[in-house]
Image (tube, rainbow, N blue to C red; front, side, top):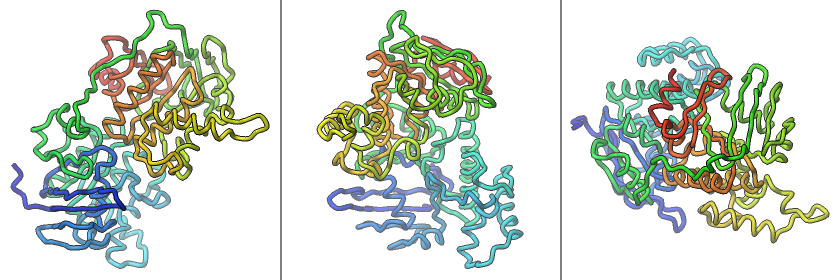
Length: 498
């Protein structure tokens, strides 16, 4: 048991927005040198609690103690001065500044420095980087770094301000499992140095891999709080959702000899990938696995017409398709759910209904070019029901939805094109366990109806749970596959490592 002093305690914290109770008397605490996992589905109240502790939001009631002292109403500056820092998902870094300048920026501001000293920035940054034993180029522009290194820069920036309580909000969303291992090593160093860490994650494997204790929020209330060893996967998911769920291997029924939905033959795109060949049958869900930079996303984007094809053939339903752009792919019956839903998948400030019909306007347009309002309403209502999208009104902007519901809108938009082939790149990144299970079930239903599905994911259990086969790509070339009963978490990871 951790006998270190309490670094942070929140007691009876309440917050409402209009008639919606986001937090209903929440109690949370974390000790020095402890990793607390704050877990909860989208809409559980995690983000609201973090914003209150960080001074971004003001609570309606309750008490917050930092270092054993009641702090009353916090501002952002108060929280930082008391050693509380939050690394949000966007990390709030300056992409056009160097690593050293980013690390030293907050420290310089807190000390009231108005003149930038590059020498001082390098000294501050160098000391923090050395403290963690990292290898970061202090002169590199942050915008040129991979996501994994940006996470490390954000952590170093917090340490430059003598952080005592560090919140990490979904820090592994865009990381490969190897990069996650590096991040966890840094987290363990911070823990050994007495930093209290609140780690927010949807991924149960990560929760058990890094946390000492778990606090679960659901509907604005703490529903479970105990040491990590008191939970297993099923009990944690049950606490998150309020009911028992499973991520067992559940496959859609596949015809014995399915006709090909998609055939890719010796496909190449200069400097990206070469001689890629694979086939997906009608009703089959096939995974495509590979480390970041392997060429997996590039293959998907080329098949969808977003990257140039310099050699090879794409066939849909047995017919060769000349894919020179996205319009060609859509006309051939190919749809693509991109990796970044916020910048590539939805129009955030447009309505839910507008987003759901955005890719299929021809189907809701009358002769003469006018949109058919009644047909749009029917299509939108049908998609919301079929995909169980939780909304207030179809006229609300997509930005009002949780991550899981936003992703269902993206799925709905592309399913409205009635594709024969659906390609998905990381479709459950940043969504909670319930939405993840729902999205996987949607894919099973589409496959049962005869669609061919290509699923790209870093989440190995996700691939195993739904894919009939998993293909592997390395350095732009295909690198074998596993199929049937050979599709296991162990076998997929072993193939990724070799």
